[in-house]
Amino acid sequence: MMSRLKSVCLCTVLAAVCGCDKKSDPAPSKGAGSSAAQGKFVVGTDARPIEALAAEDVIVAVNGVALKRKDYDALLLSIEQMYRAYNPKLRMADLETQRLKRAKTLVSEFITKQVLVQEARRRGVKATPEDRAGLQEVLQKLAKKEGMTVDELAKSDNPTVRIVREGVEDQALILALRQAEFGDRLKVTEADLQAARERIKRYNEMCEQTNVMVKARAQRICERLRNGEDFAKVAQETSEVKGDTKGVWGTFVRGEIEDALVRNAAFTVPVGGIAGPFDTSDGMIIIKVLERSGVDSPVATDGAAVTLGRVLLLLGETQKVLDDKTLRSELERVRLLKLQRPWLAELQSQARVEFPHGTNFWKKAKNRQ
Image (tube, rainbow, N blue to C red; front, side, top):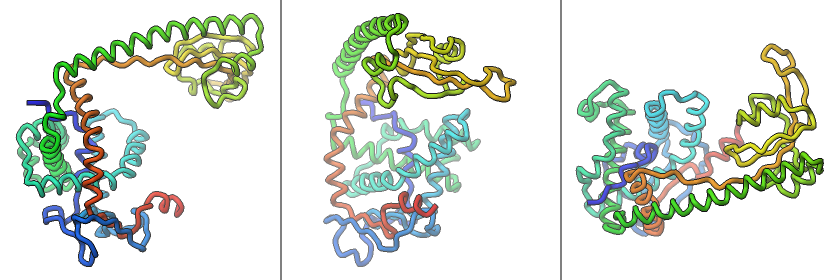
């Protein structure tokens, strides 16, 4: 039997929060004016951003199943805690960036998850042990973080634990629904794996051939510059970067230049000098030191800054060769996205989705700051 998309995104699993009506049968709100089967999009006139809503206020409801402000906050906390568990060395700035990013997607994820879970229940689909097996890692991670066994986790009343546990169960149900809907069309065969490996191999070979030519071109450009050709003119003619004005890259202090070789050249090459080409993560870079000020010393009160010109030639980025398990999961993911798009759109068109406080939460919140 096929692998059941075991590489499930952690945040997708955690997006399985519901309001107090979670365990009730999905039904349209009173006075809806149309059946859930017909589908309807309802937006209230009491427009408030999420940050202004009270704990019991409903952000969105799908066929009567509500996402309340308190559940939204609890879900964000759960995501943060699980993200920390998976990334113990995470910096606070990175955590805040992740939190803001997830906050802006939770509402749409809730809608998608509810549409799928409700369809699975309507069809009487049941999750199998295999559906749950690939999601156990999430529970094991959480159990370890909470100092519990997985069995103890299953009985815990902790809100964060409850959200993750219910999310895993709902995700298992969604996996079963997808299998019931698409069956063998999701199956990745050994022939599919081999074909994918051949495609990656051919692509990487083309990248390597292209990169040989790019590096040779970079050497020729560097020679032209060292022979006295005007840097701005050559940069305008050859550079593949968008945004540099007449070859001027910008002014930087030492810590702002990521590549070590470029950084060292920027602060050691005489003003007016050419350095490179350097093979960097951005591509092949040739620099000209246009100006330098300050003192390049850790104890200097006026630290050094350098203004650089740049020629950038883009390199082909080879694809990583994946192990069989990872490659199979990636092929299944891509195939699922292709199959699911029209099917999910049809299911969503039949659902009643209500936004009592409007839908433009983030623009309104920003304008109020």
